[in-house]
Amino acid sequence: MTNASIHVRNMLRQYERQLLNARRLARYRMALRLAQGDVEPPESGEIRRRRLVEKVARELYEHLLFTGSENPVADSIRKELDASAGAHLQFQYTPGEAALQLVREGSAGPETVSPHEKARLLDTLWHITLAKVDETML
Image 1 (cartoon, helix red, strand yellow):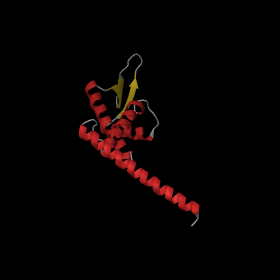
Image 2: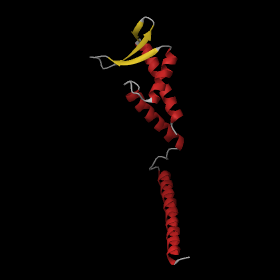
Image 3: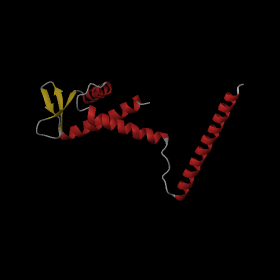
Image 4: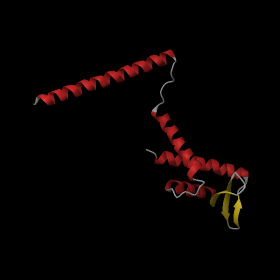
């Protein structure tokens, strides 16, 4: 073995020990802060994942679903909503109004959905979006 490779191995071994000590000290400091009540306990992986899923679902719900985006996930969510509603639904923002209109394509032509049914359908849409994002996220 050459002299340089021995130095490199020793340097890496020392660096590994320093990393282990730094991690141990960080855990010790966190335990002290928790014992003193200074910091909330860190979130578990499942809670962190659920928050991330909700954040992504909210972005998808607010920005892609109502704009008619050609996103494959948004398209599959819209198809699921259409299947649960029993008819093709369109999201429209009519000129002069800030509120979203839900229009159902029926046999008699397009008709605006009642406010009560709109609230129910939007709730269904939120649950479908949440489930789809949870299913497709790693």
